[in-house]
Image (tube, protein in one colour):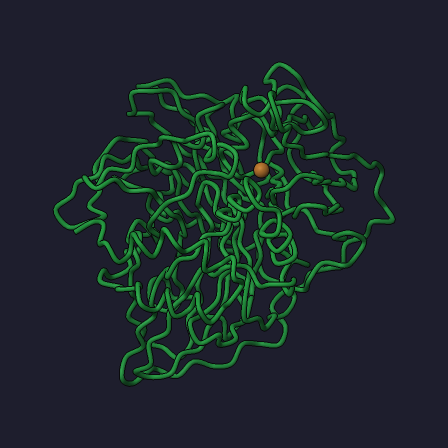
Length: 504
Ligand SMILES: [Cu+2]
């Protein structure tokens, strides 16, 4: 049955458990509800085809139905499949073309999130694909080995389109993977698209955003991982690498294993860190990716949870949520920004193939050099309260909502800039910049945590925070086709928390 009473009642009280800030209690409640009945779907790899020196991918955005619950055929959308997409395997240095056909009944776009690419190939709001049309962006893959993704970016419609399933993961290879890093797709290198969806009793998941959803970000009553609900994964090796993508609309996941075992973070949005970082909890906001390596013991299952944020700080979400919880009323309702879920279970076999320890160094990652920055810009993220919010116009950057006819910034190619992002409001906002991998310089004047010190394209800005990033657009410039910067809570983006820049 889709909605067991026990789970529904737990989910209804989940935020109350979180409000207590009691990790132990939350873990018990989650342990009681995680049933892990479905094997994790591993999306097929799509490598495209070589044609005239180009790598070609044929992608069709289409309607479908997906069996999240046995016997219930949920209307969905997907790319070459019924929900989400195959994992696209891309190679640095290859000229790559995507033939993107819109077989949907409405206009859409397909944005290449995290990629440095020509403006006309970006797939943002200006590259709309009408029903029946095929859009053919082409660009050279210039990124380091990394986990990227792609998703609809239709103006004012991104949230419902991604909710329905129009998103997928891309893995870039650069031939420089260090020895000892798990890399066998589907065996010890696992794509993990984390989402949550709100299912009705009939198994449908219509996008019906209430005022609260538009403010807090749309959230679900079930975790969905690669399109499977609370799945398990059978593991045959001592160590596995999880490529975690937060593909949710509005949920910030505070990830931890059920026994709070340590794991090693090996990559951020734009590729490998300089060295592995050992952690027990990790915050992942919509749009962000991280890659972790976790070691397993033969025959001992362990689960990955999304937990309430740590009380009193410890991670960057903690202080923020603590403050909100104390606020009462609307503010504490927005604690729903960080849902609690038993996401998936890892089931190691009775005997495991041995895996080597990770290397001490993963990649050459020079320290960012802010001294050479040619310019400084400010981006103030605000949620207008009161009448403006009620009218749906309260989500602004520097006081303005998104206008496709207004270029907010013009940036010079090849120059480094410092962008300051300020968040005086009550909610955390993941700030995403197109066409670049940036580096975080500071959070409220302090250096970023080691797992955030690598390449990033999305940075979570907590209430009261001022984050500085070092941005640079190295390769592609386009004075006519603007790129976007925006909050990656899709409801906020759709409501106007987005702006445009060109690179000249
Ligand atoms: Cu936001």
